[in-house]
Image (cartoon, rainbow, N blue to C red; front, side, top):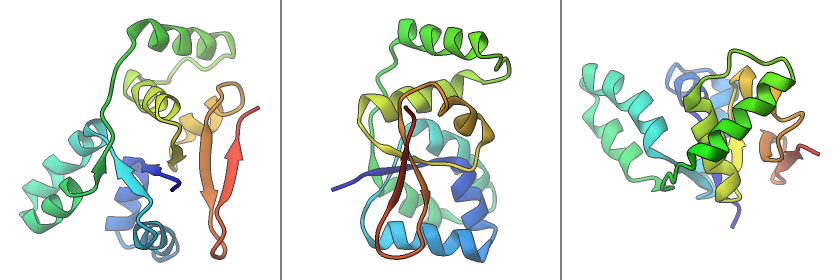
Length: 141
């Protein structure tokens, strides 16, 4: 089964009711392909708890959670490559998410422009779009 790590940028649009994007994520959820990690949960849960939507927190916490194993040397290598390519404003959280995707051979579904930039030179798979029942998968060369 293809597992798709859904980044906080997608969840935020989904929760804000962007219908086109909500439909895409709803399909991924229905296919039981969605996964999450603790970094993404840490970005989402505090705001959701603040609004009192505890049932939504419970639902997010029930999603398949991919353990993060940080290899700091690899994080530094990823950032060094970013700098060599002129990308100077990519934060460590994005690098940790990228490393998590690569380590676990996941697809990444994100609207974050940093991942699009990094896909031109880091090898990882992205979930780009869904127009029918077949996944359209992009892979950086």
